[in-house]
Length: 324
Image (cartoon, rainbow, N blue to C red; front, side, top):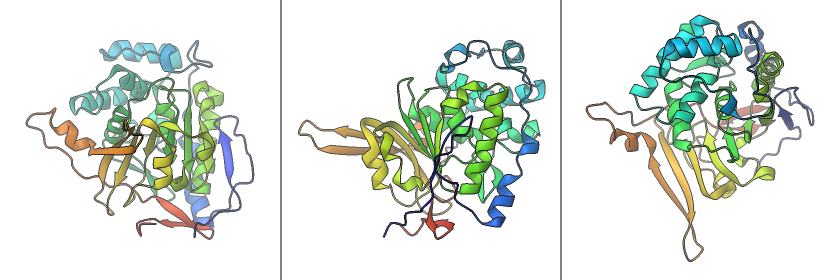
């Protein structure tokens, strides 16, 4: 039987629009997820002309650090230490074939990962690995975020669903590719903490985040009211592909999802097509295996380890590794 929680919250990024009451998480969850205010930087100013647009008015230089840093300091007042750390990681991501189109490169360079990583340390914010953000979840490393985003190939008119808002970083990055981003987070206290970050960032200078639509609910069931979605990205691991998400994926659409047992998922790219006879087909392949063919003499990553996609059990969330 599907558990339907009686209290579900829907929010716009800023100001946080509350429709319904926020579910009460455990005291431990609330404490662990609440310690974020001291990590938010939000210095500087909004870039001229970004109000009400997608990313195209914020177009940082891609080829030269000095030009990039000068642009971002003038446009946004960003701090040099974070710009240097971001640029160095950006170069590593290009070399590793985690970013290969200009639009994803610009989205990465425009997104302030430091605002979502729960740390003021520039080196840690842009480190290769994931970071613990409390609530038993992590912010994925920049390489895997870049690879998943690049594989999605989001276009400006695409409606994109993210399952697992988490830190808020992935949705923020997607907002530079399309103004139609929908994101679902199951942990109430984490969702509330991320709302506070979005609200503060939007009020300070990141007005583009006001377009991100979010709700607190079980992401396994997607967001049917806004389906179909041209793109779906799942940022938690599961041992099967959720049928509701397949149903909500548009014909011709793409889903990126980590599928497999705990600690050893394959990062799959699913494409939904319709045959001449009208039959729906799902094609899938491992995105790391696909990119291995592009890189000679490179050790290719085959398995990934995401935190589990969860479900409600009373007032708590528990793993879906049981196949349900």
